[in-house]
Image (tube, rainbow, N blue to C red; front, side, top):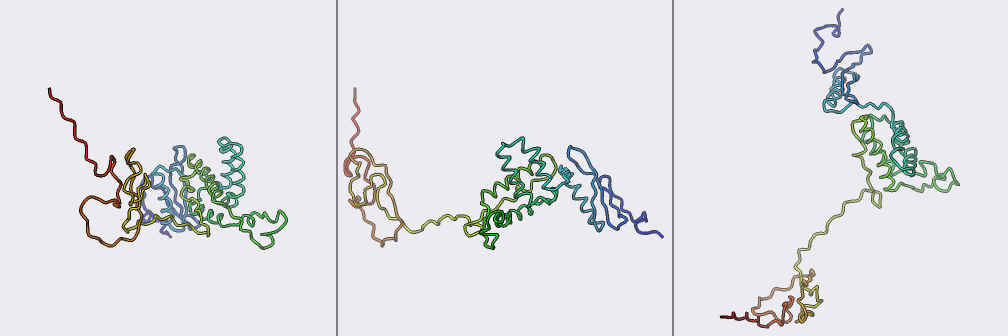
Length: 297
């Protein structure tokens, strides 16, 4: 008896380079094909699915990434194994001794307990963002058992002291993770650095995200003249303090007040109480000197 699987007419013909899709003995579907690998080489990968459509979709996604020039990830270990390798073989030759000591303490104290069990190739930006938010709101005295190692006085007796990490420490931890994953991207072990798009959020004083500062709105009320900013004269002063020696280059300062009642416009020269700066040279009514007469020969 022939089954649909053994019938040659039921098999679909796939083009060269599209891979192979077939059903296994355990009724699962397997798809295999060649994709780009690190070192500008090609490697055969295999994906699995409960249906033929699911297995084919996974293989198509990997082939599409390979055609865009993204090599298949070669890292097979966990985040903890990679961070240990990075500290012992890469960072030790690039960092100072004190910086390397702080990086090692940060990895073993925060990164490995939070993200160490995840696969390096399956680490996502959502995982990093969720872990940072949890680390920001977790009491370190309760998490690391600081109070149990000394004479209990807060968390060990049921009174949480809420010893939270500062925003500077969170930024330092995130920067270290980003540097470690950036080296994996350069070595083509992972396709992209997921820590670049998952920066830690800095909370406000009440624990919530602060709202951005707003610019104060401009006032639409009319402004009233209060005095000269250079010679500090009020509008009622008839002469400028520097009128006799040099010209006053100051500006008239203003202040926002209620609009005055409307008045009829007056004609003629400004009086002593006029709110404007006095002239630059001589008294207000001084006649301008006549030009010198041209000499004739």
